[in-house]
Image (cartoon, rainbow, N blue to C red; front, side):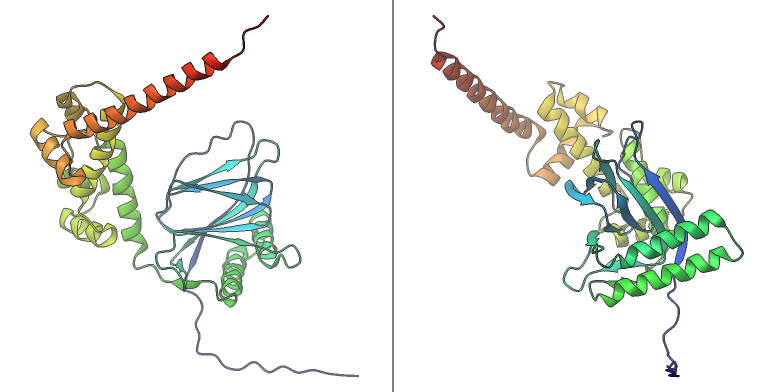
Length: 300
């Protein structure tokens, strides 16, 4: 008879101060339409089957079975599924932490592959699903502990650090205000409007927004309006006064002043430059078509 005894040393480390918000299982089908969205918390997304792409910050990254996607708070993203091999995944919402990389500060999204031979992460995701589906006694506590084990296993790889988020309430408020401005930028908006919409003290909003985003809420609103006005200047013949009104500016002069400050050009200069570029591209395309038609052999 052999007996191995492993004594556990006392540790000063405490439990991770994280909270599991939800566990969800999803499968793409024909009536599923992906839309851009963001969370005020971190999300882990584990691909259990299928293929597709993960879209964020104007990037599309291919994803497949056994990929683990880490999405930090307030990152706009969506998923697109392959029609022939639909995506299936398990997602976890986690409050109280964000991931950072030793090599890259400000990490938004990162991708890991749960190697076929190990599938170390898959086990914990599947156990979490089993617990929430069975809802046996103390399943919430079991899920919370499974989450902590999963995170500790990930940290062992030395690929990531876990950082406590400064305040989930602040993050949630800022995410709401940003989305509100994107949806209502054509309307007459000021700091009081935003504070009322978010049920936030306007001085607290101004301070926390600038601290989190780097610019004031009104400057962020102006940038949204300028971005929209660029599209209208490039693609329509609307008078500049109309574009100023459509994009929510109080006057044409304020629009012109704001546009020049942000782009270093007047709206007219921007339209003229981009109009010429568009016309040149169109003429070049027509010439190419004309040459191609001339080279086509005549049929006997």
